[in-house]
Amino acid sequence: MALAGPDATANPALSDLESLQQELAGLMSGLGHAHEKLAEVVFAADQRNGELRSKIAELERQNLMRVFRIRDLELENAELRKQAETPHPDLEIAIQERDRASRNLKKAQKVIEGLLKTIEELQASSDDCTCSARKRDQTPEARSRTQVHQESYADPEDDGSTIRPQRFAASTGSAATPPVTPRPRADRAGKGKAKELEPSHETMWSGSASSQSTWDTPSSASRALAKEKRLWYLEFMKPPSTAELQHGPIPFDFLAEQLELEEDVQFAIINLEAMPGYDTRIHAESLVAFAYEPIILEGPGPMTTYFIGWTRPDEVPLVEYWTKRSGDLHLFIWPVGETVGWRYIGLHSLSFVEMESKWPMLQAADKHRLLTHLRDRNPGMDSAEFRRDVREGRLAQVCIQLESKGRVESHDFLREYGLLAGD
Image 1 (tube, helix red, strand yellow):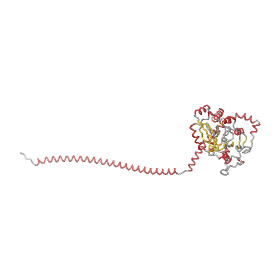
Image 2 (image 1 turned 90 degrees about the horizontal axis):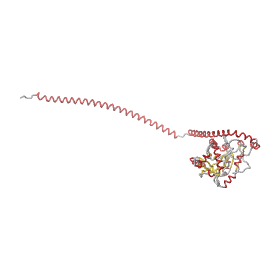
Image 3 (image 1 turned 90 degrees about the vertical axis):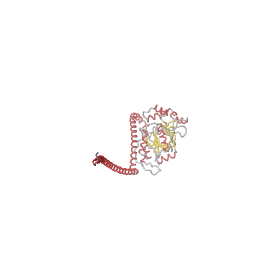
Image 4 (image 1 turned 120 degrees about the vertical axis):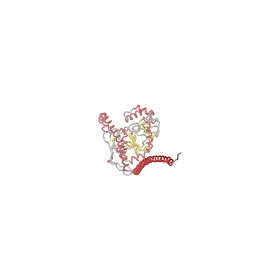
C-alpha cells in the first residue's frame, strides 16, 4: 500500500493555479483589447466633438453676421421710410409738369393732324373753286363785298339781345376754328371789372354776310309748321330756342385772350373740329363750354331743346356723369356753316336726359341733312350701317338738355370779360 506524499497533494493545486493564471492572462488580454477599443472610441468622440464645436462656432459667427445685416437693413429701411414720408415739392412739380407736357404734346399732335388734313382738303378743292371764284369776283356785288367796312363793335341799330362785332368781308377759308396765335394777356383793371378795349386791341373780324343772315333769320315756314304740329325737328345753323341772348361771331384768338384760356385748353377746343364720331363735340372748362357744330334737337312744348348725338352704349354713363358735375356753363357754339368765330348763346344748364329714340320721329329732310353732316365729319361713313346700328341699338342716342339760366347773368359775363365794346 502506497502512501500519498506532499507531491501528490501539490500537483492538483499547481494545475489549478496554472489554469487561474491562464484565465487571468486571458482576462488581461481581453481588458487590453477593450481598453484599446475604448481609447479608439474616446478618440473618435473627441474628434467628433471638436468638429461639432467648430460647426457651432461657425454657425454662431454666421448668426452674428445676420444679426448685423438685419440691423443694417432696419436702419436703411427706416431711412428710406423717412425719405418717402418727407415731401418733395420740386419732384412733385416736375412730375406734374412732365405729365402736363405729355398731354399738351398729344393734343398738339392731334391738332396738327387735323390741320394737315384740312389743308389737304382745301388744296384738293382749291382748283375747282378758282374758276368760279374769279367769275364771282368780276361781278359788282363781289367787288363790293371784298371792300373792308369798318363797323362799330356794337351796332346801335340792333337791340340789346344781339351784339354784332366789327368785321370785314368773307374769306375763302374753311369753317374751321382759326389757329390760335398766343398774344400777351392784358392785366385786368380789377376783379369783377371788364377789360378796356384799347384802340390797339380792336379786332377786324372776317365774316360772311350769308352766314350772319342765316343765323339771324327766323326758322323757316317748315320749322314753324313742325312746331305747330308738335313735331320733333333738327337745327344745324341756327341758335337753340333757349338762347335768350346772342353775341358773335367772335374769333377764337380774341376769345381765348379775353377768357385767358390756357394753351392746353385752347388745343382741346381747336381739336374739336378734327374729332370723328357721331356724338356732340363739346369741351367744358371752368365756367365756359364750347360746342362745335352741335346738332340741335327741338321738340314740342317748353324745355324740349337738346344737343343730340349717338355713341356706343358703354359711353353713355360717362356723358351722364360729365353733365352732373358740369354745373351752369356759359355756352359758345360754332354752328354748321360758320366761317368766322364762336357765337355766345348765354348761361345754360346742361343735363343728361334719357328718352326714347327720336330717329323714327324725324322728317326725311332732317335725316338726309343729318347723314350728310355726319358723312362730312366721318369720311367713308356707311349711311345704311349707321341707320341699322341706331335701329338695333348698337349706337345709343345721347340727349343733353339745354336750359337757359338768365339773360342778366349772360350779359354780365360778356361785360366782365371785355366781350362788349365800350366797357
